[in-house]
Image (tube, rainbow, N blue to C red):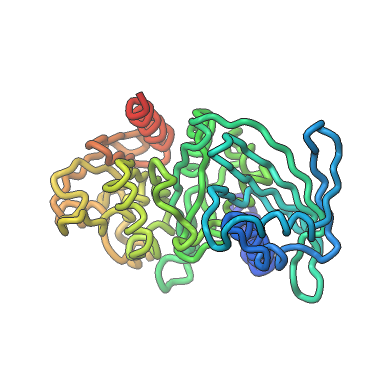
Length: 373
């Protein structure tokens, strides 16, 4: 049964990876729309739309208003080109079937406290994905809707140079994600390369994991993670380094992700957090004065002495988490196996394993709520 389930998971991961190139092309078109409308760039917006596309909107009387794409694009000639107009956007979901796709984008206009949900029908024409039609709905958003958390995940499919498959811990993603969402936070995912990421430790007997595994918007976010270049650190209240074997590779040495985390921490009084092997992602972080972030701090994560040093996966680890934390001046704390463990040291919050994911998220929410008072 385990082999069958592992095969199913591998097929799922393969299909996600195989579809990435097409979905990246779709994302590129949506980014033209998002960036073009944020910076008053009519030419860039034009690249996103089919020339005869229509937008199905509501007028001031809440009646259906059909707007040709050419007219819509002309609205963005009135502002100063290449100047940010305060409008921000993010891709929420992409659902593709061969040469057609449906996409959802969220647009925020903070100055008017408006949140738009844009739905697009897209088609691939001459190797290019274009928007055939758009419909939109708007509503008022409040302050807590602007609070965002950045989940940091890895693109690594294998343990180092071996053929042993690995992935990001699905449980650690889902438990924290669900906790933040219930509290009104918006979550973005970033990975070193962007795009789809491998998933591991999926348990469909767990109702929460099963719910998210079949949630199209959620899985689309994991298929379309942002690159570090797409991240604006000042938007985020906290970062959350996800564990799983993948966390040992790609993330810890990524300078751009390091810079994002430290800007959030140092310049915006944000929180850095990690769970399990996700703590590997914080071992190289340094403060402005050149000291390791973990120096003089209490840190948790998956301890080296709970690893099986006789196994090939362990022999491929580029470094050991506990050993490295202690070498860099941190105090590593943990509890017995299969027990949750939380360490809070200022704005550094770390947990031992997937059982700690929820309490790490809860502690972040608690601290952020006090900062907002």
